[in-house]
Each structure stands twice: as C-alpha cells, then as structure tokens.
Length: 97
Image 1 (cartoon, rainbow, N blue to C red):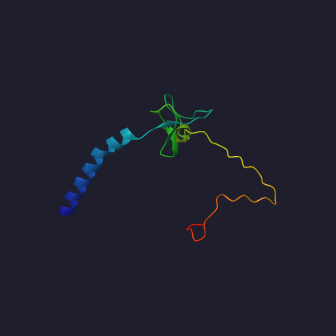
Image 2 (cartoon, rainbow, N blue to C red):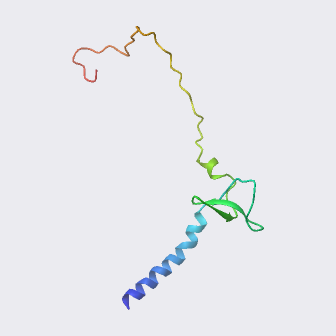
C-alpha cells in the first residue's frame, strides 16, 4: 500500500512539472522547401528531432548555434631554411628555457 501511494505521489508531481518544462522548451523553425505537415503547422526542430508544430522562436537552430565572433585567419611568414630567430635569450639556469 505504501508503494502505491508513493507511486501516486511521484506521478502527481511529474504531471505538475511537465507543463513547466514544455513552456521553457524552444521550438525552432526547420528550413525546408516542402511542407508535409497538416494545415496550420510547419516543420520544427525540437530537441534535435524534426516534427510538425508551431515555432516559438524566429531563428533556426543552426543560426542560434552559430558563434557571434567572425573567424580570423592567421598568416605566417616563412623563414629562409638557414635562418634561426630565437624568441628570447635565456640566462643559464633560468627555469623554463
């Protein structure tokens, strides 16, 4: 009997927490040229799964995940084969050289 009341309590707590989780989940529009969803719905990405629904954001998942900083490219200058340029001169016994 005690197990049954515990299971009932857990089920009631899960049922009250479910709407709160559903409200915080983001539904991203999925860009596609065809729409096989019923009328009034469109393809969305929800937790990595593509399904039919109504998006609650205006950006796609890929746009949201894109890093805001532009990529920078570093160019290195090639040295002559015989040329050696030390970064700094270490004193004898200096740690880390």
